[in-house]
Every structure is written in structure tokens, then in C-alpha cells.
Image (cartoon, rainbow, N blue to C red; front, side, top):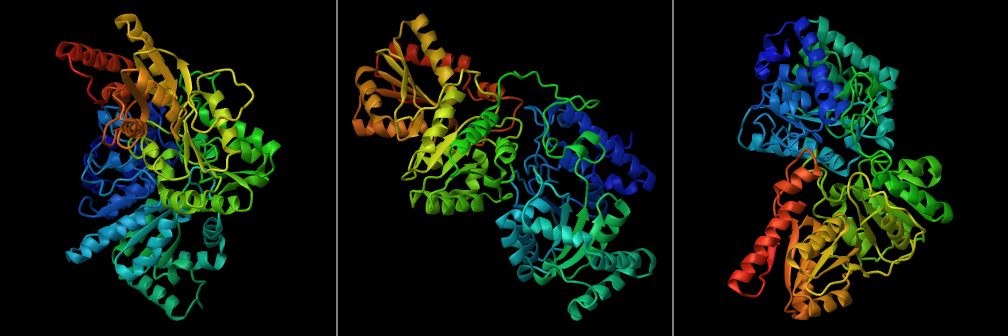
Length: 638
């Protein structure tokens, strides 16, 4: 096994060409083996095997810096930088490596990421630091073609040539983000690939590099002539207009060819772009044939490609239930449109795309644009629904404030993955949206306890004149019977159980936990408990809360969000306004970034949010209060 001999990138440079070829095969087998057990981003990683090898053959990390956009394609980099061990075998599990790059994990990971569009700006920042310190190391940004639908990427392109003379950008062009790439840049990349004049020019240039002594100097002369003759030799690319030297297209699976171009790039005296063509999922036929499905896969049988998850197949995921519900409402109302930011399948909008394609808009990885697009539509009576993961809506916060909430536009935002996205970790957990949304004037923020309530919340939002945000978790629903949707009174909660001692106020997937806790403490301690399905984080049900403050000693809030500024904080603020003697016990996530883990239950247990932990803490709390004979203190469970 060649891979077993690779303890650091330096070991690559001692391999023969035939050993490099064997290593490529072994790396693909390793990625398939580990993702089959743990799930993960299999397609993107199989597509960058040769590119990653060539990068490490040409450069020396950590002295040189690689900045990978998103970094979900960093598995090969991990394997070549001393992480081919048991922790890699447990990739994306609680005791294994992250599925993304992390500065805490290795000195070879110069920059962590998890969202698209970060590579060019971050790499430029590293270049500036290098230039200020008068160092001589190299900085390489590796970005997929989908990154060019991100506004941040274009902002960086506008600044690079004016900021530094030494910048290497490798475009990993596989025509896909998660879904098929869309927009003008996607078409433009295709034109660069298929333009026979442009392709011939660069094939001739590569021929010089291969055959002519001093080929690097010849290549510099060709590039200079091309610029000086103002495109007479070949059509200019938009990148050259922005101050880059553009070379491509290049076979992204030909290691010798990639290496030659990288070596040339190292000597460039101006920013340079290498445009590589790769195949997403290369080496695994199932991933090649269905690149969208295999962008990020759950555990599977590598021989058949079939999922091995034992989840309840009969219960649809929240995302799929949402997608089908939206089709139902859009069929009845022609003003309803659907907007996604490169996530039609992940958000459930692939159903809408299939059934009502003329009212479906995929804007690419451009959440800011998605929100502004929706705002513009809403000013003219259209009812736009933006389906964006909780973690990704963070990217459009200014547009939500300035363009939607300030103008009180009736845009519906459906925030999937609210709460934990366990295997993906801190870059993908949706644990902040309650905190950053409930402070916004005009915003309505809600979370359903089940899919039936999601049905009514979506129906309600489409009839509301306010910006509405509906958050719901990743994974399967509860399997409840779904009834006809009904209009919910904004800010009106649902009292599921009446008591007179403690009152549990819960949002969404913590409602079952609240019911279970109430039952336990009634049976074990004789405490009469109320349970409230809050439904709305904003507006809060002030009337019911005021009532419960008067006839309950303790309010317990439960939420799948950070405690700071979240649902429990809204109750705390209201208790203060009421000058209520009732005490508050808040349950939520601590003031830290939550790591990745194998599943939701594992992470809840680790941070004291599972049922057994909550029983223990509340029991200790009761015993302590009885012993001390004092009023119940305000507590945080974190």
C-alpha cells in the first residue's frame, strides 16, 4: 500500500510516476470506504484526487498555504498530511476528524471553512500578510466554478490584482455545486472550455512547456504577447481584464500536466488562474451518474450504492414535506414562487421545480441575491418563499434587515437544518437564527412541533403581511396525521397540558422533551406541570405567559438554539417587564461553537440537553432548593 507510506506531503516527492498512479487509486478507495461507513462529501473529493496530489508535489505546506473554498473536498488533503489513521476512519463522528478543514486539527489547514465563496478573499488576506512581512511563500486558492456565483468571490476578484502581484487561483471546474450550476458564469466557463481558438492557443502553450528547453520563459513570452497584442492571438478572458494571467482549460486528472502548470504559476509575477476540468465523483460510477445525489451521501453499500441507514423510511423528511406542501399552496395561488440558493434537493424544492418550473428560481450560491430578489418580487404582490438552510441565511442578514424587515415585505423564509446538523459540525449547525431574528422589527419567527403544524405555518405565512421565518430541523418528521391547513393567530401558543406549579415552554423538537419531563416530575415529585407549545419565538404569547407567571412558581424554557438572545431570553425579558416572582430555568445550547458528532442524541448528551441529563439537573435543583429553603434561582442549563 503506497498510502500507508505517506506520513507527510514530503513523502510524495519520493514516489515514482507509477506509484503516484497507484496512490490515486488507493486514495479513491479510501474515500469510498470511509464515506460508505460514515457518509460524507464523496463526489467532490473523488474529483480532486489528482489535483490535490499535484498541489502537494509542487508546494510545501504548511509553509505554503492552500485555501480550499468550502473545504468539504479536503479529505484527500487530510490523508496526505498525516491524518491517515483511526481518526480519519471515524470521519464526521464525534471521536473522528471533521468533514471540513480546521485550523485546530492540523497546521496544514491554513484556513477553515464550511461555506462557499470564502477562498479568494481569505487567500488574498494571507497574501497581504506575506507581502507585509516580506516572506517568499506561496498562497493557492482552490475554488470550484460554483464559487463564482457568490458575490464575495467577485468582490475578491475585483481586488486581487490591485493588492498583490503573487496570487495563484485554481478553478476546479466540474460544472456542479450541489445541483447543476446556473447563471452567466456557468455559461461563460462553458464557452472557455469549448472555444476552439482559445483551447488551441493554450494547448500550443502547453506543448511548449512539454517540449521546449526553457519552456517556462517561452510561456511567459506567449502570455506577454497575448496581452500586448490585445487579443489578436486569442480571445481575452474576463479574468485577464481583471488583471489575471489565465491558463486553461487543463485536464484536472493529469497529474504531470497539472504539476507543470503549477510550477509555472509559482514563477508568475502577476496573479494567475489555472482553469482545471475535473469530473465530480470520478472513480465511483454511481457518483458520476448522479452527481447531485452523491455530493453529500449518507452511509451506503459501496458495491450497490444503496443507503444503509436504518431510518424510518415511511416518515418523510421535513424538507420533503415542506416542498410538497409548497407545491400544494402554489397550485392554488399563482402568485407563490419558490427561490433556492443552489439547494433544490436539500431544501425539498426539487418537487416545486418539477411541478411548477416557471415559478422556480435557483440563483446559485448567492443567498444575498436570493433575499433581495424575493424582496423585489414582494413589492409587486408576488408571494416569494425562500428555502435556505439556517446556517446559510446568516450570509444574507443585512438584506433581511434592510430590504425585507425594514420595508415590512411579506417574504416567507423556510429555514431547514435549524438546530443541529451533527456530522457537519459548527459551520452547519443552525443554532443562532432565533437570536438574530427575534430582535428584528416586523419579523414573525415560528417553529412547528410537527409536520402538521408546519403545514399550517406555511399556509399562515402565505396569508400574512409580515416577513415570516419558519425554522425546522434536519431529518424525518414525527409521522403525525396531516390535516387541512388553518390560519394560526400570530403569537398565539398552544397549551398542551395544564398544571399549577411548573410551566414548560418549548419550541419545535423540544416539545416532546417538555412533555416527557412534565410527566416524569409529576410522577416522581408530585409537581403539577403545564406544557406549552410556544409555536412563536416572536411575537411571544404575552397573555398566556402572564397567566402562567401568576399561577406557576417556575417557568422552564426549552429551545434548539443558543441560550444567548434566544427564546428563553425573550421569556426572561418578558418576566422582567411583568416584574414576575416566577423563576426561570432555561434549556438551550451553551455560548460556544458546538463540535461535530455522530448524531443529535450524542451531542445533546455531551452538552447536558438529553432527557436523562435534564432530569438529573432539575432533580438536583429541586433538592437543593428544598435544603436551602430559598426561592428558586434563575438557572441556565448549558
